[in-house]
Image 1 (spheres, helix red, strand yellow):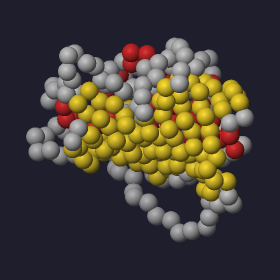
Image 2: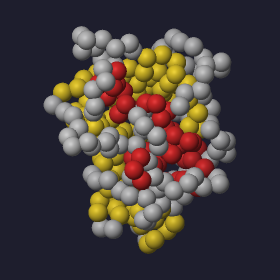
Image 3: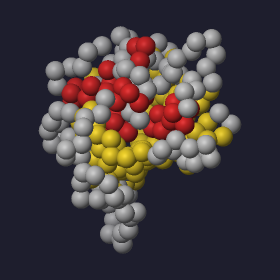
Image 4: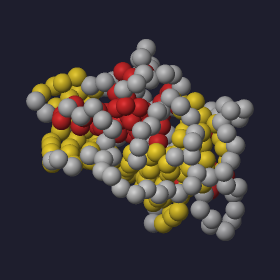
Length: 280
């Protein structure tokens, strides 16, 4: 499915009932629904359900089954809590009675507090770096057409089991306007575009085939963020065991402020019978 004329339409949903919404997702590889699109539309459905116009503090999504493009995706919402400090909405995404994902979206009324953060890693600025074709990280997929990317740094292959990592500058390729929810949806989309590849990178560097798929994905927003301005995605896989890899990401803006954190658990398998990677 091609991209719509206005990229913000990727996150649009129509109301299909009192607590239900409907949307369509573009295809990733092999016309499978892209997980980042499900996360973004689940966020939008939760916001519509409670009339929120601000960015949530977290979106936690469990992927339960693959979806296909060309068929509507239904988002059923349920408000779990609507209080003075927190609002929490549960979202179930389904397609033809098959559950694709379950998400919990939470808003917090910001409070006065102290502050601290991990410093942004040192490295080259995106200006002047060559454009990176994200297809090289895991195969061709139209979901990458929305993203302008630059490689800042990455680990070199080793045989000692060191944790793989990558640092990528990313931004949404086209301007997105000023709606903060649209930018949150776009950041969620971009955050799912490389994490499984980090966990699989040692296999790829060694020329070993690997099948990988996202099992869950969490995005935590720490402050205002614009997806159409350069963001540094610092991603590392601290552990891989039992056929699963954990990948964590820290997303910094150009000033070095940590604006978003992510984590994802990925299934990692040796392919059997010519299977291809399942995510993206």
